[in-house]
Amino acid sequence: MDKFRLNNFDLLRLLAALQVVFGHAVELTDLSMEQSSLFQFIHAIPGVPLFFFISGFLISKSYEINPKIKNYAVNRILRIFPGLWFCLIISLLLILCSGYQSTAFSYRDFSIWFLGQVSFIHFYHPEFLKGYGIGVLNGSLWTIGIELQFYIITPLLYKRFFTKGNVNKKLIILILIFMSINLWFYQYRLDYRDLLVYKIVGVTFAPYFYMFLVGIFCQKNFDLLYQYFSGKGLALFSLYLTYTYILYSQYHATLGNGIGPWLFFPLACMVFSLAYTRVNLSRNLLKHQDISYGLYIYHMPVVNTLIFLAADWRFSNEWVTVAIILFSTIFLATFSWFAIEKPSLNLKKKAFFPVE
Image 1 (cartoon, rainbow, N blue to C red):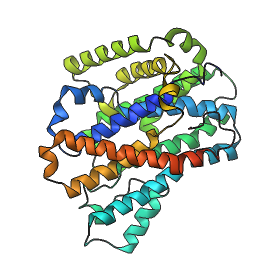
Image 2 (cartoon, one colour):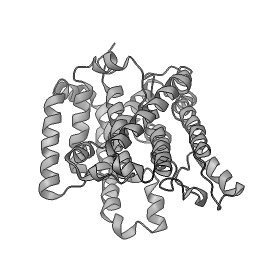
Image 3 (cartoon, helix red, strand yellow):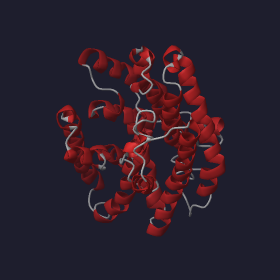
């Protein structure tokens, strides 16, 4: 097996998904540990930017290996939708079993919401769910729509920009353009967050595309980066944490999904290095099993159900609350992987990466 494919990306995605699950478990259940050092440490390595970087790195290579649009589209659909649809079924069952009822329910609103959930319009949140948990059944799914946009844009990038000329130069220009959009988006978040135009921009690929493009850039320059970063994961991990601590403690840098480029670029370097340090670690630990996607899509229905059923209990049982969320999500994700996702992925056409 060549050095490109022998990596720890499965393990890194798993850790990124666990970061998202733990972060939401603490934030959305209003637990006091949100200001703890552990919580801030976990937020220093945000899952969503990490996902976007890895996606750009692997999807671009996968497309280069098998650029037939039909196969590419089928592979992407098999990766996303079987698990997503099964998650929707589980979510509806959780609502039904919880006994939740809404006076605002209508078949029209339910039909619109349902069609959005089984497609890519996950940002529509109907009134009839406002009383269930935080009022948004599965808010984490906003990134699914972003990923699908990345998938659609990738072939266009290759046909329009990467067929000839200096690809690195073009990538750097695109990264700078979309990095500027990202900076604008987060700079004026407090000022414009209630404006419809701003909300629409937030569900497009634009504010996050530079992260995906950085992944493509690293893939295109793999040999050079491998020469300098492979085998140095632990050292870069320590340097990144030190650097992040200084920016956070001295300059109040934003952590979490809203990290700026000054943290994202070092994060990308660290992730690349960890992926190619002790490269058999992921294979030995996970045995090619990947529940990271399941962890990501199932955790919010679990969180909302717990909030609805145990509104007062969770405040006096903080770590038990987090443990229940983690283990329930792991159980659902594991079942989904073996029953739904893995069988679906086995249908993929000539996939370079089995889980991409």
